Image 1 (tube, one colour):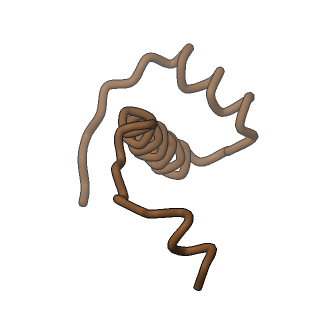
Image 2: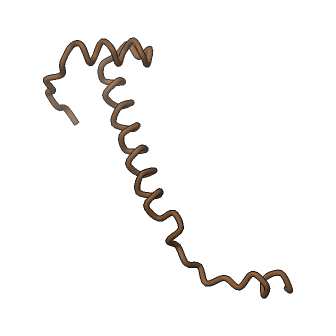
Length: 63
């Protein structure tokens, strides 16, 4: 998908130097992948301690 973006040069140069990515397209892809991964992890953390599997440990141990 072709998209025209207006990105601040300072942010782009800083991100390129930190990631050592020299192509702007690859930098944007990398940033999007990281945002998606971070948000998925955040969603998983919301389930911590809330999943009820209804497992009887004693029954499983006696198998």
